[in-house]
Length: 136
Image (cartoon, rainbow, N blue to C red):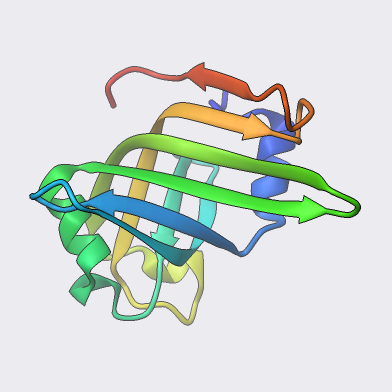
């Protein structure tokens, strides 16, 4: 059973771009747009890209093992919706091509510990916020 609701999975599958937040060793935040996919087999968020292995985000995740990820949009006239995922993050030297065949081999994978969804299963003013899983 997935930590994500069926509606959240459908929403994630319909999106192409999200934002990955990491923090460096000094505690300074860093947020960047990234390509991603929901990995249904592992129930994770897999992030790939170009030159990912040489990037600050890749180094930050390798160092801290933590990340947050957000996908959101707004439908007219003003219906905000999105999913936030916080969790344990890992880096891998392969798998990025599974996110997008044009991406490099490196991959960042986030195992959710907390998920917040809004405007998907609920209205935007009453988020579906929950802790999920164990310390994966």
